Structures are given as structure tokens and as C-alpha cells.
Length: 232
Image (cartoon, rainbow, N blue to C red; front, side, top):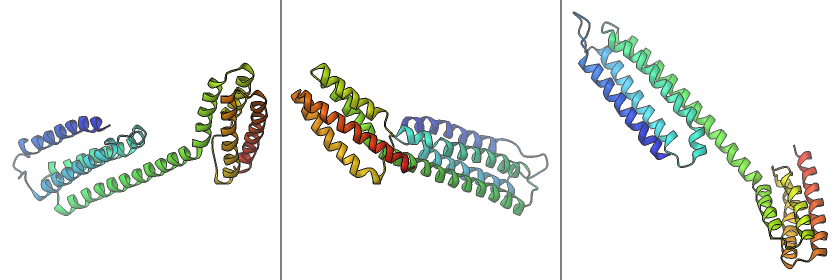
């Protein structure tokens, strides 16, 4: 995603240069002094907004994790919208030289404050979503990992009977509730131990043992799912 930021940086630099060209090459109103206090208030406000927007873009687009970059899109959009608002109101201050300096300061301060608050709120939302996503990944890792192991075990089965029993376990795991909970730790630990025994039995092609352990595993997985329902 760093390439994404580098590409955007080029666009940002072009816009900043264009803004400065328009600001200093364009002529002022006929008979009016161009470079008044109001002009500089607007110019400084827009420049600050440009710098702030670049900082937000760096934070939002310079991630290696594609999921975080996706979550940060709202932060990028918010900062970009804020830049546009500042350009509009700051541009008015620059274009109206007779505007009282305190009006320009108040106007630009309000716009910049709104932008800062909006960016902070967007960042809080992004962080909250990221924490929820990390929590979900942690809570679903047990079943996801067990599903992969069960599928692998089914492929390693040497006989049709063993394969059928492994498939029964695989189906039970596959359609289990993916969300875990601290209260499920004992039964999940027992499932892990049983699955390890099942794996050994499959490797030895011990059909009777595979059938016995597979049935026990299906029961344990069913118990886990029932407890999942109670914990919701």
C-alpha cells in the first residue's frame, strides 16, 4: 500500500503547486491591494490544511495491511473533504481583500476546527473497527484452524471407513459456530486432545479406534455448539 501513498503524494504536490501559482500569479481586484491580512490568513489556513491532509493520507494509505487500508478510507475521505472546505472558505478570504482580519481568522478557525474534529472522530471509528476485527479473528481461530486440520486429516485417510469417519468430524467442525469464548476453553481443550488422538489413529489406520474417537469428537463439538448458543 506504500505505492498507493506515493502515487497520491504526486497528486497532492501538483495540487499544492497549482494552488501557489494561482495565489501569486493571479491579479488582485482592480484598485485593491491584493496581499492584505485577509489574503495571508486564507493562504496560511489552506497551506495548513494541505499539510494536515497529507499527514492523514500518510497514516491512511501507508499501511502494509490491506484491511487496515480499507478501514482508513473513511479517514482519507474526511481529511480530503476538510481540505476542500478550507480551500473554499480560505479562498474567499484571499479573494476579498477588504474583509476584516478578525472575520477571516474566525471563519478559517471554525473550518479548521471542524476538520480536526471530523478527522479525530473518523480515526476513533477506524480504531474501533480494527479492534473488533482483531477480536473476531482471535475468537474464530480455534474453529478455523480445526477445520483446516480436519480437512487435512480426511485427505490422509488410508481406507474408506476411516475417511468416512474423518469426513463426519470435518462436517461437524465445518458447520460449528466459529465464535469462541473463554468459557469454552475446557471443552475446546478436550476437543484438541481428542483430535490429536484421532490423528494418531488415522495414521495407524486403526479403524475401531477411529470410529470410537470420531463419535466422541462429534459429541464434544455438539456440546461446544450448545454452549455457544447459551453464551450469546
